[in-house]
Image 1 (cartoon, rainbow, N blue to C red):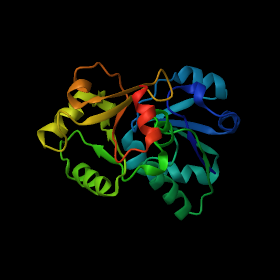
Image 2 (image 1 turned 90 degrees about the vertical axis):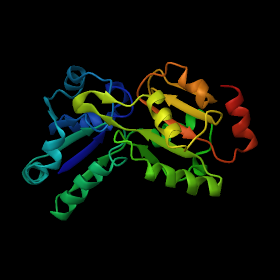
Image 3 (image 1 turned 30 degrees about the horizontal axis):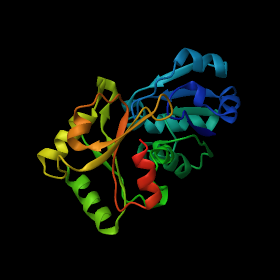
Image 4 (image 1 turned 45 degrees about the vertical axis):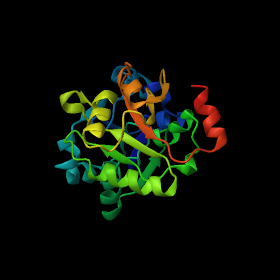
Amino acid sequence: MLYLIGLGLHDEMDLTLKAIETAKNCECYIELYTSVWKGSLKNLEEMTKNNVQVLKRKDLEENLESFIENAKKNNIALFVPGDPLAATTHMDIAYEAKRKKIPVKIIHNSSIFSAIGEVGLQLYKYGKTATIPLSGKLDNVKNALQVNKKLGLHTLLLLDLDMENNIVMKVSEALNMLLDKKIIKETDQIIAFSNAGGDSKVYYDSTKGLKAKYIDNPAVLIIPGKLHFREKDFLEMI
């Protein structure tokens, strides 16, 4: 059996009781390259009464088959940041396991897609999500914003990272990239949401204003679409 277990957004205290009890009876692994996790591996091991081996990207992408094969004979738990199925990497793992007739159990947790409700915008009014890549290629971002704007929908922009090289895109860097490509203007009103699940903070300001602020990582940007009066009221209180 393969268990994909969500760590939640901040640290080991976000784990559900179901996740902890399940992990006690498994061979445990954790990947920390798809998102920022501010927890303690030592504390995680104490909570689950188990050793937890850290996997790198190549362990799950280049050697995925051998990892999955192990789940044919043993109960394997893979801890992942956020919710297990919020990242395509983990969807691929679940797919490959099911393709090999290996049972897969998902133990859900919070993710950025639910946490953004904290900024005050209605979740059902979000359109296509896009990632601002470290490469600077913003075609997907531009397309998502254009489509969402026509429909009056909000746009969630994720900021790229490379955890194996300790690189996490800053809000100011992301905004400068969008400005350079003329995707946004200095006067546009934008939301920045940082440290979801921890000491979270919501910022609502012009592009120029946000650039002047220190905004901690991890963070996301939200480009508001057509605002409901209650959404406007919420943003005015930030």
